[in-house]
Amino acid sequence: MIVTAFSILAVGAWAYLLLGRGWFWRCRERDDAVPWVSETRSQNSPPVWPDVVAIIPARDECDVIAESVGSLLRQDYAGRFSIVVVDDQSSDGTAAAASAASNALGAAGRLRVIPGSNIPSGWTGKLWAMRQGLAAVEVGAEPPELVLFTDADIVYAPQMLSRLVAIARSKDSVLTSLMVKLRCESPAERWLVPAFVFFFQKLYPFAWVNDPGRATAAAAGGCMLVERRALGLAGGLEAVRGSLIDDCALAALMKRQGAIWLGLTDNVRSLRAYPDFADFGRMVVRSAFAELRYSPLRLALAVAGMGLVYLAPPTFAVFAHGVPQLAGALAWAMMALSLTPTLRVYGLPMAYGVALPAIAAAYMLFTLESAVQYWRGRGGYWKGRFQAPVGEAAGG
Figure 1 (cartoon, rainbow, N blue to C red):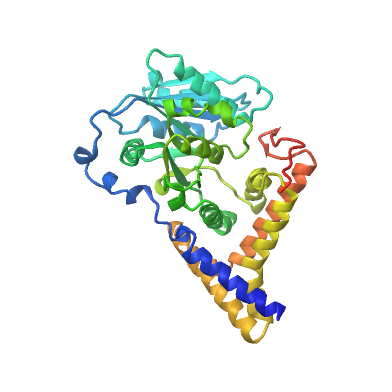
Figure 2: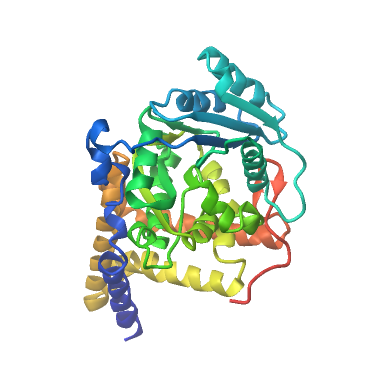
């Protein structure tokens, strides 16, 4: 009876995920699906293209920042646009690589590189670098209306700044963000990247994020176009200064000021490579326990929930008999089906969906490792810094 009950519960969970959670798995929220943006430039151009400044926090990004800066300097944008790179105490020539990229394009006047200072208590490294860049652009006589917070490993197709501004105008959004196309070339990336995007959409259904009537808020930190005045009214970056998951914290802050919008794209992509499973795992481990608010209770519930939703169905399908076996097979099929649209985004065959239980098990291990590192005082590790707060675990 217990096995039967759990197998039916797993089917019910997948029925809810497929039908009752904002259709997250269908990947319908996309930059090229916004009708106003899909028309010709003459039809969708705003009366005046606002000033935009891109702020790039960069720490030891010499190998990727030149391509990122170059893609931004090549933007086909009718308004004024410039870039501020905050060199966050790099040791590899990041600043020189960024400057060389602008010089090669004859655009040195549109790039400013500023050295980052030591991190004050209570700030994470990235947010402090972002704050320094924002302070630099706000001291000018004419601060920009919009700020594009973007990472040093992100490259943009030439039309994308115009498209971002157009989306922001059509949606009247104070924050417009794109889930950039992650690199998906190595075996580790092919197995883990689509699931990462899938899990993010499941946690924060984009349709709910984009609904002003819902509290759900999220953003993707690699590409966030923010209305500068609205950010100031919300309390500025100071209001989220200690957040390890800074993009979602910023999205929650901005949604109190107005609409936000988040979508997928094929035209903004990440250069960040994860050659091995351990490389990708370190990225997940950095913030997985922070997503659970450093709570042991939430960790236990998350592991139990993932076990029921992802591990129980194939177990029942292979080892059980009768109703539990049928229910397990049905839930496993629903699971594989749900991953198919994300696999299509990354050009991968549907067969990868069958392996989602094993992939989910890897993410469970990453989450447990994140908790262990936090309890060891080594949480939030990124480029030589342990950034997770110590002694602030939630009670549940």
